Every structure is written in structure tokens, then in C-alpha cells.
Length: 118
Image (tube, rainbow, N blue to C red):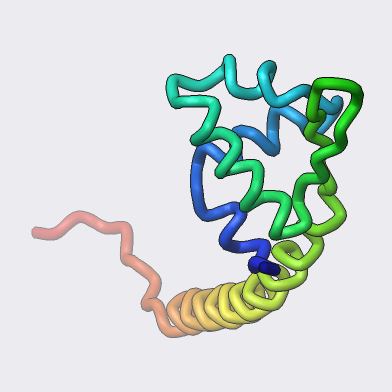
């Protein structure tokens, strides 16, 4: 079964696993020892991450090592970027509008008289 990258990132435990193995591969026991859940639960998380293409599990002797595949995160980055561009345009338009209003206020403001009232 192929899963969506977003499914892999949806769970905080899976995100933490990715962070742990981002710079060096670890065996499953090393990963599991960092969590207060069963090794079986960690295997399930690793299976989902593997199905998403975010992790590769490799057998080395008796151990299974987890290796991150961060290039798969480009899908997330591309998806977020389209919304970043939309919001940047909206904020730029808002900034231009606010600057226009400030300029109008300056030109229509009446100068204050500095004299004493009697």
C-alpha cells in the first residue's frame, strides 16, 4: 500500500522519528528506546513512514536500520509554497492599501494652530 506523505507527517511520533533519523540511521531498538510506547507501536509507525517513502528499513544481520528519505518532503514543501505565494500577495496588497490610506491622511490633515485660547 502506498500512502500519502501527509499521512506520514500527521502523527507527532512519526515526525519525531523522522527527526531522530534525519542525520544518521538507527536500528529499530534505538528508535523505540526513545518512546514510552511498545516496540510494536514503533514498528507500525515505521511501516507507515516506509509506505509513504519517508523511511527505508534495511536489514543488516539481525538488526533492522531506519534511514530517512527527506527528499520525499519536497512534496510537502511544494504544496506549502503555493499557499505561501498566495498569502505573500495578499499581505503585499494589504501593505500597499495601508500605505495609501496613511498617505491620504497626511495630505488631508489640517495643520494644528499653536496659540492660546482666550
